[in-house]
Image (cartoon, rainbow, N blue to C red; front, side, top):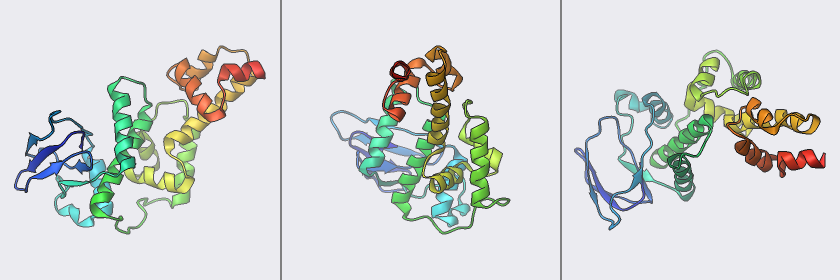
Length: 242
């Protein structure tokens, strides 16, 4: 949870602490707590609910001893929220709160990144561990992931779907792929979609909205804005100039 105003928080059997925009707070499932507003603006905050298996996987990388309490992975009540993390979660939260379309894969990867960042502030560097894959080395895993994305780039794949394909956890899939390729799964797939669409924009007279939908974009406007960020001009302008 990311406080947006100042509030006093007390977890059950723990000392009270001050939550404010500099802090991120952790709650295990069923966590009992009391909150008392300090700010005249009241108690406002952004909550992110995390799948238990994902929370366990992230914490396990930083604290292997957590296995003695798998249902309550977070032993810290709070950590610090650096400026980049706070901005990242605010931007994501605002997009979703406004009903703006955000690709599910991007949302999932951003939440995984947020979780890793805030856990890192509480624990420090991850505990060294062996590869999570029992069947393939890292190069083979990346190869398999790239194949899945290459074959199914037009589909709205979830992280869980991709992870199952390569027999890896969601968290370690995101971390390993980012380290190996320098990009996220979402951006890798987005690049494939845009490069496929480029051929249709330049070499055909098909309606741009049809190209956008076939490429997996939710709307013509979403396609246009994403295309412009990638190629520095809109599809319609590129077609005219071509």
